[in-house]
Length: 260
Ligand SMILES: [Zn+2]
Ligand SMILES: [Zn+2]
Image (cartoon, rainbow, N blue to C red; front, side, top):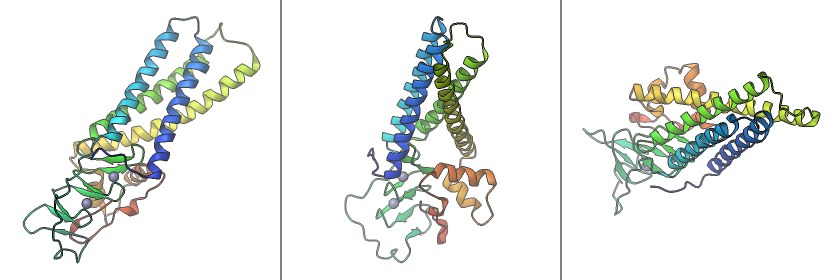
């Protein structure tokens, strides 16, 4: 299914992601490196390294966004599901395979229907507006790579800003307005990096925990339904769906089958 999902929320999140990355690059190069280490060999080193991380981040993001998350193929011919149309989804007898009446097809165990992608996705974890795609069986590794690079870039940017203010800087300009602009951009960058850094590291922790337990986010929510969810999980499931979706989309239906 390598299609670009037409979702306004996804477009907004992707635009926000790239604007934030380009702003971070601008501040680090223009206001941190060029202002505080222009005569040092550290300047080209950090410019190349910082932009290499950005390149890897963008590459993994594009792969997560454009690759097929594991869409269940649609049948060539229309199938007759008149016997199962009484409920939206039904568990087949003696099988873990289920029927999705929205896609009008059979789907393998652990596949779920995504209302945004309008397809059933194998081993679906969740729909992520930040990659405007589902996180599923086939693109989860790109999503995790993307999270790691965002975490690395955020920490790298914060370290560069902190070091630039802490170390003595004989070559720094003493011009007051320049110093003021540098201070303003530094504060915005540290706030932005802290926000994105904490956000992705928390999701990364959740993803690695889910892999270790061989359980997707949807299955975690299914299993905790009715039992109450830990505060950590509630915060994470909300963050994953920020700013457009909410966990109410995960609907408990009879037969233990859910859709998102
Ligand atoms: Zn479906
Ligand atoms: Zn989706």
